[in-house]
Image: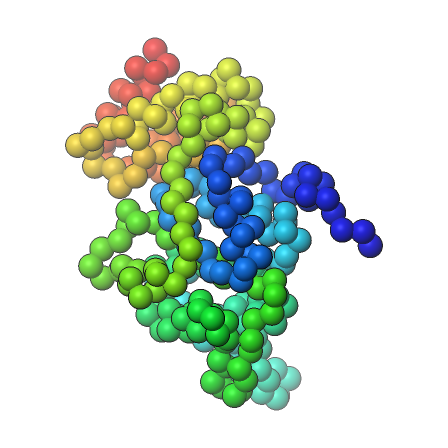
Length: 268
């Protein structure tokens, strides 16, 4: 089978519109077996970027949504009882190492501390994964890549990525795209024409610029796509924005009213 050309691979990959040099850096990291850390707010395109790059590079992708109860065993694997017999079952990280795939740990800061201990040998020159339960030591083949992401805005004293871990990764900071790029992305993903998407993007800019309001984050590109999708399907703008912007951003009545005021200033 002939290999896909870069243009053909790009066309078949999940849609992603580059905003800087992130594609080049990801390709360089993959070619050199280097781990990569993506930093940025919720819904700014980090996960879609990884999906796009895995398809572009022709590598299998294992995505793990990290959470408070995620342990090293969840990543590596465990013995399970099947048909009356006990057998070892690889976790997603182990499968990725064996297959030379990309393993993406989404919001890695949410995982338990024992997870980072497991990752350290994979993020230096050893590129190894030790499976204590079976006594195996796997050496990551060419093609394997570890990618992790987190939202710096959610860091606190109890949940902070240690410098000893952070400095094992190349890193890219993601933000929200410029208005022209965001308009093109939202229009492409939702099917709503760019003329009607433009006010949504303008609204997002106003919300992100607000200060003194009880919002952990501004409206994400993902939420704009949701709103545009509802509008494209015929839902009135006010109802779409209530469901896709106001309700996801806040539970506070006064903040919700302030958001409605911002919407009114954009839409009249």
